[in-house]
Image (cartoon, rainbow, N blue to C red):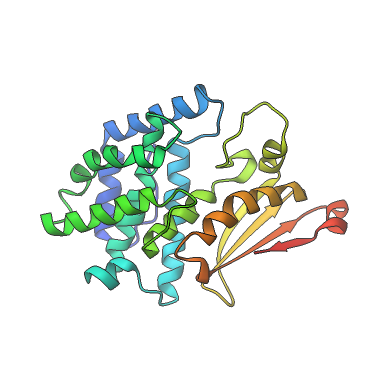
Length: 257
């Protein structure tokens, strides 16, 4: 399945996406991760569909920040460009969950050695050796920092961390739960109808979460809020949750973070 992200005029990103789409080994790592997550543990999808959602969300978050003149870390610290920052967030999105093929527990750490073996071939035709090391280092940081309590040291890693949480519509929660059982996890996951990424009025990014009932607040609190607060982009993001339905409106019309 093609990654299908809008590369615009970024030739480096276009080359990366082409390399990812052509990499049969990476495709199989995604499939193996989903076997462990879905088939063996009854969890939500962590394979190709999740990767595509996170990559697109990360790219949109990053571009909203750049549009608001927020300087990326690879620019500030390595004198590179926003094009390189886009490569980092998409590469990290593609590789952040490959460690689940080994085990869901500590999968962030498990993803690192796998990413180290995959990244060189994805980047070899795009960067010279020294620049490639920078992109790899920044990508690996974004992978390890997508765990909710791991400190993000770069803008790019914060983007990937938050993008990972946004795949939560229609039961696609990133919070582990057993599918088929009835609990606050399953009810709240089913309550999320839509997540929208918009340009904010007061902050660069506005995340709108549409819910069918107020149980979805559990997803926003337990997933989005705690990851956002531990990210590097929290000053630039506003979150608003809307609850639809007359009965629910009397209880909780909207929720802001």
